[in-house]
Image (cartoon, rainbow over all chains, first blue to last red; front, side, top):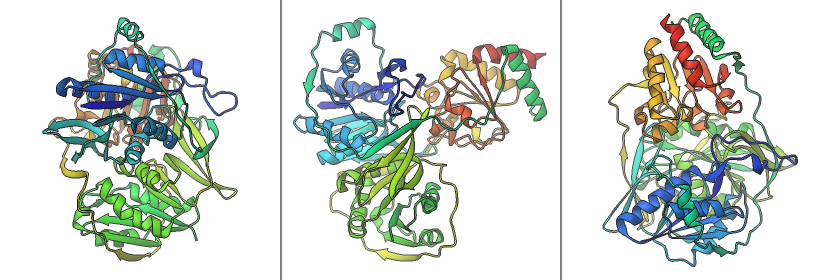
Length: 247
Length: 316
């Protein structure tokens, strides 16, 4: 089974973020970066499917700074890594197009992506990729079963409800966090992976769908901030509990 | 007049609340609101929606009983190509995420997902959406196009419209003979333990709890103030609390008297599930954590220093 997993570099959820002076981006040096959280679950899932069914996992990443995430992916267990040295931000269509251009030339049975990226919050690329490749898809996948060449996916809906769908192969699945427990990768493992060569592919960007006017901070919070030592904070919380009749 | 085509969201015979929010887009963009309703035996729902839309397009077929993006696409394609709406609007939900990017790519329409605000500036569409883990907002001006696909975030378009008495027009639909994706069944959530949606006091823990062993700290506090312990997605994903304790879009919506958020950053999927609580107190190390945007009281600090102090004081 040939499995392709799309991964990208993205900031960790607790990373500090500072808007750059031109308001069109963020200060890259400040960010705590790594494999996009959802992509990590997708990669782990891909590796597990390979371990159970045999085959190959190829990771592919779009981004001029994607070397580190590709090496980490190889260290996790991917067999090959492809890098497309192009950068996009919110334009999911361009991202999907450049990935599709490369994937079209490959042999694949299953394509996995993260549900979304932490920086864009778009959740577009996987579905667009399916559309461009002319194959079916399922999103927000929390479980995959494979039996006699048939793939069944569990999709997360709202309010704790899930659904089961059967999808023909090849297909694209976008993976929700929590589907598995991604394996730990040691620094030594990454060092070893760095000996492998990244396969470079060209990407040709199309017209952008939208112009980013600016990035800005959300409106100031309305919360009353409680300050002081832990003891003082606890005292104040106790007062609030009493006022509200909670204790 | 420009047309805004809203794709209604229904599941298990009920209208999803996002549908009403989508119909409110007419408050932001001038245009005729057409609501397209796909389903099986849903005429009564169409009547209900007609109060908030200028027109309801009703497509009924056995095959549309449950959502399937492949079938929805076939039904929508014809309508969109024929009417060329200015905006095709869906929710940024399990349905919209599965469908909207596909529609946009197939019809080569610009798309922006998960938007919280829509404006028209100098005749161009300008939208706002959260980026970087909900810590920043982006303002985007869309390129000129005959039409656009937009998905909206739940809870952001609450300004209700009504009294429209729109017409209902039925359309026929013939599903494709073979499908590449087939709906099989729903899997209902398990309900065995505590029902957090019934609790008056919720101590909710997030990524900041750092380790499974630290959940005990929250449990100790909960016991002293008659509360229950719940969690945000990362804690459930890690298996530190059962799924039924999850607060948020994919878990439970809660409205307790006190919601104490410990180390929860506040992704919108979480916030939607707890923002209507009577009293929200958030403790987080990160002063920029989005949870502070909905909290009544906020503490920038270390839960591992503050909570033990609080437990001590309650003990006295």
